[in-house]
Length: 381
Ligand SMILES: *Cc1c(COP(=O)(O)O)cnc(C)c1O
Image (cartoon, rainbow, N blue to C red; front, side):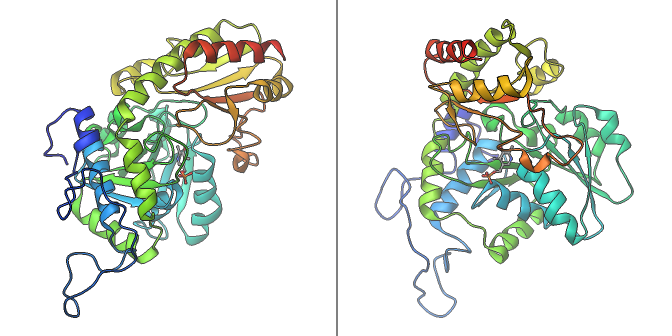
């Protein structure tokens, strides 16, 4: 946990882990059980029912806390379940400032679901510190940052926002795109880190999950209560898969970042392309802040095509290695059209996604093969 002084790579493999005490198994056993025997009513070994606690989940939570350099972590059945549970720390009448380029599902949850229960939201450009400050009201309790954002890869200055928020306004950072290897928001003053572990942490497109990591013990106790009270928990097999994937996060992120930078540079030179969004490019408006707060720039790229929606759709349908699919962060390269696919829920808002935009999740295949695939898809439009 935060007392673990090892480097990230060591924490990702050993953080909060120990061989199974009863068998010596080096890898965490999958405790596929819903309940636990009690010697007498109320007398048990720390586990009573698997919604409340499960040893495989405990192991995953310990690892996630160690990776983010936090004191506590809680795992959920999906990223959305983690976000929904976090928002239940707040009460009707509380106001949240949130980025206008958040994950489509986050926008949908805030705008279509939680607003019905009296939570208030203002959507602003989170790369603009003054816009965030101007949105603060007497009842503002939370600033919700996603950085880099999805799909425009905008960058918020986490340290500047947490300084501005002070003690009375909490700051949550959805760290899904960066992963704990590239960016550690708690060290920059954030109160809560949220992950869709479905993406880079799991890393193999084989499991859905979410997490909250934090340092404040009172908030942790409340979130632990909510985790059990609401019950959006991951099963033991899901926890095992996430744990197994997480151990290689650092080497995967290095390769995702290397491949993506090379592909972003290539795309910038193509005549069919109007604009490339990648925080590792010097042309990106958030590049300097990204350089300051991230170790590298990750595997996500968005492209705007000069010829608009037609070119975007043709390109997205023509790649052979990049698979046309939602989600991101797996070892395999994916391509998608956010306006039709992941971000359709924002189409009726004033920050809907351009139909000319295509998003790439650059995988860890050989970069020459990926470049060739992009080249042939460009030739087809
Ligand atoms: C996918 C995603 C989520 C939602 O996570 P699920 O695991 O799909 O529920 C939240 N935030 C970001 C940035 C995401 O990419």
